[in-house]
Length: 310
Image: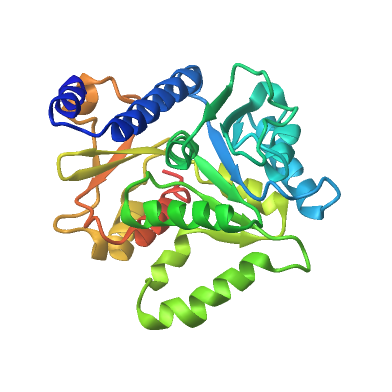
């Protein structure tokens, strides 16, 4: 990091560029400080429009989902503005809310449910804000919104599709009778997929629902057995609460052998780098040489691991 700063200082970098780099680094450092005490707590980020009014049915859906997650000891992360962001924090309550606010000239003062809270980060740049909203969370709920919401949802799915974000559940929540996300999906089905621009398995990266109960189950259920993953060299290690038994493991190899470069899915003890870092040594794990391409199929593998009873 210091070497990078030195290079910026000695290579004649423009002052404007230095200011951008300095501000971005400062924003990330402050956000890391705010999130650090809560790293071991499951968190869900909620995306949606700041223009949504409290009288809109989607506001109530957001508040209900946030309350259900808070009751399950999750925290809710939002952009800290009005609309959907306020609904999420109202539902979760101040103690279980973290805000990552963006400073805009025409809107986006922090909502009253998180204003003046030490768990509020103020940011200047959208890219640093989106980094923190995605990096720090274990699941995502996206509600109808405008350009900003669509930008966030497409970036999130891109990161999952390419493996730049760890596998995580994504729910796209519609209001009954107003199929916003079904219309979005129809665009993918009719105009994007026929051109070969996405794969059929990419549909596994998200779920559309009109029911907050289903949304809650999707988010919480992703971790009912699966817990986390880590790359160790060319091996992807998946940690879980209950290991598959011999028959279940054979079934997983039959179903998902196509995403293994060579070898098979196998049970393994913690690998040396995991032991060195004391990285969830108590959990059973399976390892595979994942092809680093079919992340939709990897999501389906995780779903299958969640059905294992050992």
